[in-house]
Length: 288
Image 1 (cartoon, rainbow, N blue to C red):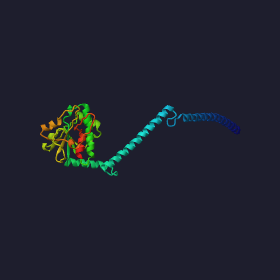
Image 2: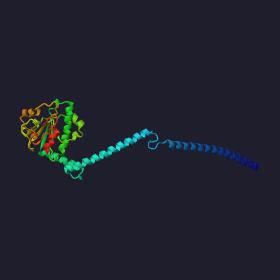
Image 3: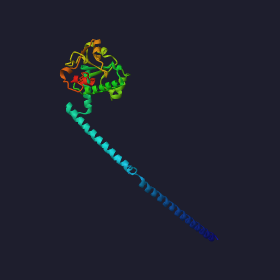
Image 4: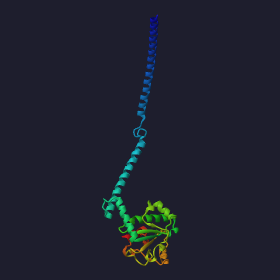
């Protein structure tokens, strides 16, 4: 009896196992087929993406855009080459004109310039720019004066014997100061003195020499113990003897550049010759 029960149980178990195997085989085939379908979809997606991805943006660009891009690249390359040639030319000119060896670094040249300027501050010569007359000037004239101050500072730094420059009668809330900050890079770090005081109260009067084209005395030499004053005035209406009269009011000596003695007048169509120079044209001639 026990044997029959065990035999029937074994048959039942074997049937159940066969049915489970059939079910597993069916589900296995279905899952495998689904997996193959998913793999096929992934492969197709990758294939499509590989076909549509542009290489360097050229696939999406029309021929006209590509032509314009090539033209622009040529222009940029030409500008770079021109800038490089101009930089090399300026470098060669600086070496030739200044006599400075090319192996000196920019840091060394900056320190040398700073040393010369500070030496001029302590031992002279001194140059004062009188900016107390700017309230009469127009916006255009202020812009021109700001440009002259920049060129004056740049040329003075390159001189073998530079002046120590003082900007007097110069307030930080004035339109000229704002114009200098706008037009001149690094103006706030210039190595010079900026003061609101008038030049006549800042220095002893006996040490002052006001440079004006209306003076009768020609300036032949630079005295290290003197302070030379330039009128910071751009006047398109050309008012005569403005700086000369100001110097006389304060009983200050005057002088003019020896233009009449050393310069030759060239003929021109208008037959016009002026001895009035911009402030950046006066200082380099004196420094030399």
